[in-house]
Length: 402
Image 1: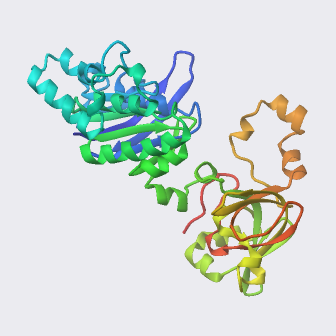
Image 2: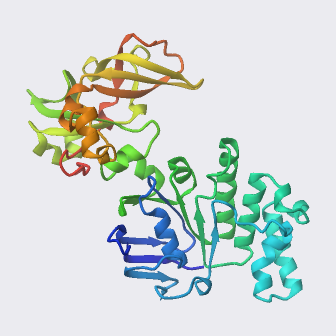
């Protein structure tokens, strides 16, 4: 096994487009690191550079302490699992798994032993004589995994391997791949656009956007403590509610105004984040996770000064909870990806960004208890866990912390 180090790695194409910029990332020995981001963000390009399928135009890539910028893919001791399985349809499962060993002229006894061992781990023993066309999608993906692990490489590279599976099978395969990686213990780099895969499978998650690394942290820290607005909006489903607000002192207390409503903020929040002192009287971005919003009628003695009112627009009943969407007059903070619309579309169809902000109220999502009885059209009171509100600088998009 080995670690993988990307030191200032860049990828610029001949037309001047930079797919990846100054990427500094270490995948520790034996770690399962997942890179997640929207389509076209640079995650697959990063994987392909590690594999040697894309040339690196800047920086240094090391595997196991050795610089491999100019090393051929076949000599990097890596194994890839592809989105489309890439199995040979005319070969049996056993032959597919052992194909790389056969090319390496591995003795037959050793080849058979390693194929059988991989098949046992992946529960494919009874399928070794079948052809890929006789297998389900999940079984084919297991065969692709078997072909990778049988080589005992230094590094696994997995390129959106579950995207072709149905929802139920994806859940099953997430668990199986995670268990397999822990059993084998090989350094693994997995790219996906699916944040649920990232959050449930990874030791650490790397969030990338527009070729720039945004944050690398364990899944829970990524969710609880996002570095910037992009990570805050991208991680979590439903995503974090982001709206403009203003912090002020109200006598000895602190108040956060969002639209026409005001929330009382405990002094403990300022004590934990003294940098907020510099934002009094200025516009700041307030971020509230849906799980921090609850039906006030079920919230007992929740303080009256820590509640919001809004008109219920939609209710999604999920059995164990209800996702409730309600409208407020606070100014929404639009995701930076939404601002990538061509200027003529924003001008002609939306009237310009300033008009978008002023014309459209915030649509806020909350995760209500299943016992909530709110319905579309109701004016509802919503209890807010004020201590857990996130704050971001409006100009830089960076989190306001200590």
